[in-house]
View 1: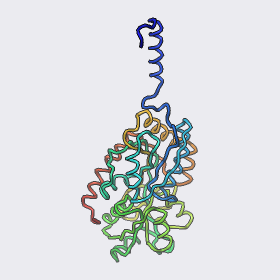
View 2: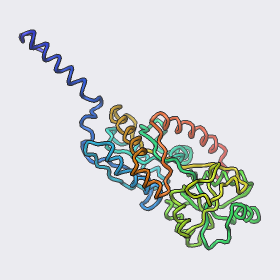
View 3: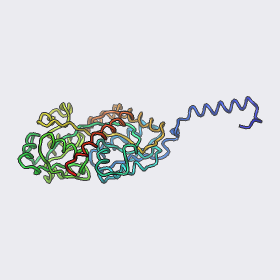
View 4: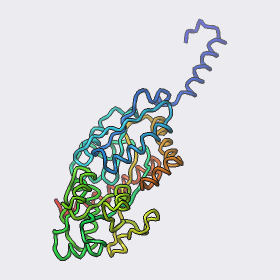
Amino acid sequence: MPRSLPAAIRRLAVALGLGAAMIMPAGGAAAFPERPIQLMVGFPPGGNIDIAARLAAPFLERHLGGGAQVVVVNKPGANGVIMLNDLAAARPDGHTIGLMTFPGLVTAIHDSRPRYTTDSFSFLGMFTDEPYTLYVGTQQPIRTVQELIERARTAPGAVTVAGAGVGSAVHLSAVLIERAAGVKFTWAPFVGQAQAQAAIQGGHVIAGISSVSGTVRLHREGQIRVIGIMQRERWGVAPDIMTMREGGVAVDSSAARGIGGPRGIPEAVAARYEEAVRRMVADPEFQAIAQRDFVVARFMDRAEMGALVAEQNRTYGEMWRTAPWR
């Protein structure tokens, strides 16, 4: 500041400058968002992951504020890895985010050696955590977990089980069932859950694994038959479905979904996302839609989400080191 200005004016200018700095959020958050936000999904339209993204998008718009517009962009392929590679390489300004699925993000690290690691991302908040289910086509005579296991035990490899690609979270859930029951399935990998369900409904595959939001509605409509839910207690929304433990197979497994972006998103922008996700999960309208669509809503903040990723990376890394399918 020029020393030629009167002292009083210099003091006023400094005060105004400091005031402006105090009200301007760090990291450029005041201008965020400056353009539409891309919410990338690593799977085709129509599956339960795509449905979760389209459920979340309008609520993110509402609770981010600032006239936010969130556009869902499908980038399917390689069990979600193509999208995650692109997300890790995106500009970290908050305008490109992705729907992250767990443990899928970490299992891919040990499966396909992608261009990302767990350190490549900013974790912004989790909004669902859903137990997986084991289901069959309605044309199958199988009605219980015990019947499916007995069929697999009688004819090893004859029971085909469908889901996303080899090494995916649902595939590893099938491996957990094999280990717990002492049987062997034949895994049938598909690009996405919608394609796997079509194969099962068509009688081309015997069974499948997917989260509750992808199966319970179809179960109630009589399009598939869910024979087991992978959690310790029966789910109050669908109390007729037995747990895997009741079927003699002690397996608990779930799919968690949240929002993430490339590493380096400004702290103020990341904090806005975290708060938006928290408000979304608490929003009565979101809760009502989640209940209608059999989505299990659960909020995790950024720290909790990061801790979950680290824990799963350790667990599934060890599982992959002893992988029987390699």
